[in-house]
Length: 347
Image (cartoon, rainbow, N blue to C red; front, top):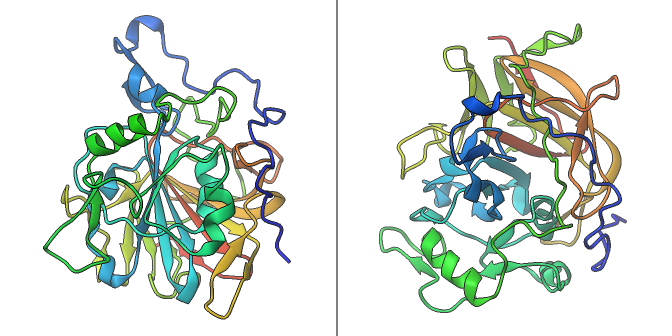
């Protein structure tokens, strides 16, 4: 059987926290924009207040009836993970969220998402969930906002589509609710790795890897048969653009009119099991060594990953045992079940 973390495992554990110097670029002090610093999520310039703000981890459905999504392009990091019925669900990590409007729609929790939210010390946003979530949601250190139990006005339903696919929130309302719940808004000391993603000081084109392969397109239809996700690399801006079969092509944000695009794509193979005859899944989020792939700037390398504790970061290593250096920008993390397949091509 799969070994999901116990309810009290690794709370506030810091034994695996990194003590190295920051991997943020060496920028002369006089060129740093006043009142700005590098985001721990993307390495892009953000205000000091945003950098210290706890992010939101938001559960977002990803079936055809859930489309279109609103303000999903504002997420700094986006997870896609299998759920029951061969579908996938998304979890957006939003660093600058207090002024956002109409985010969603919002759907229910799956417990394995919470363990990935922990490593960002994020406030977890969802709308209920199956009984499997009770242990992790009930932990004293879990700070979540559940749309099914929140006071009236924190979340709202629109009339332009049918329930349950019409549930949204505005950042200002969640800000007030976090205050009512006495959730700290700044990163809690001792909960999150001081260094999570390791960013390259210069543009990382993977030229240092002789085994790197060209990868202009990434196909995940075999791993995500309902969603039919794929990515296409645009040489003009150096980003991978997201497409879905259920979107009939480009995965668009209805609020911004923009297609979802990412500088970094990580594929993370993860051990999983089917829990019951309804097809609910369990994933082993904490593990010592599993396979993966890293894509950036139209190239790909094989990687390995590990996660040592609930709040410890998932670390990604090249085949030489060195931690990979991500490029500045948004990151998409695709969790794949062990044994699933994908492909990529140069054209």
